[in-house]
Image (cartoon, rainbow, N blue to C red; front, top):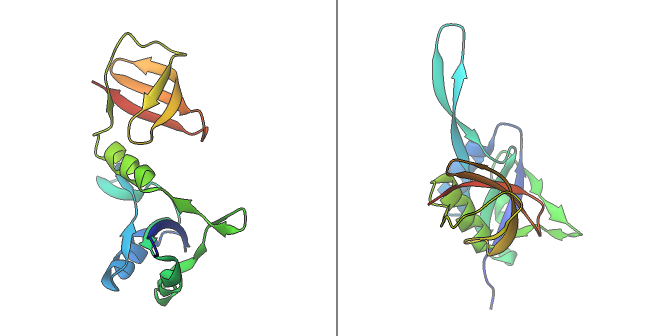
Length: 152
C-alpha cells in the first residue's frame, strides 16, 4: 500500500505561487507557505504576499506519482537529502500552517531563558533563547532551527 508523502520541490526563482496554482490545476495537493510583507516604494506602500520558502513548494504525492510535477512550467527538480527525495512529515506541515495562522501557543508557567520546553505539534524539545512579553523564541534541539510563537 502506498502512502502519500510531502516532498520538497525546487522551483525557478519567484515562481513559487505560479507553480502552486499550476500544480493545483492538475489535481496535485500543494502547499507554499507565505507571509504578508509591506513593501515601500517612493510613491506608495503595498502589502505583498512573500513565500516563506524561497524557490520551494511542498507537494503531497504517492511515490509513483512524483513525475507528474514536471508537467508544470516552473518546476526545476526535487530537493534531495542523502540520496533520497527530501520528505516532510504531516506534523511538520501542520505545525508550519499553525505557526503562520498564529495558532501555535504554549501555556505559560514561569518560563525563563535557557529552559527546555516541548513544542506542540512538532513534539520536539526546544531551548528558550529569548522571552519578550508573550513572544518566545526557541531553538529546536533536533533540527537546530529557531521557531517563534506566542505564549498563552
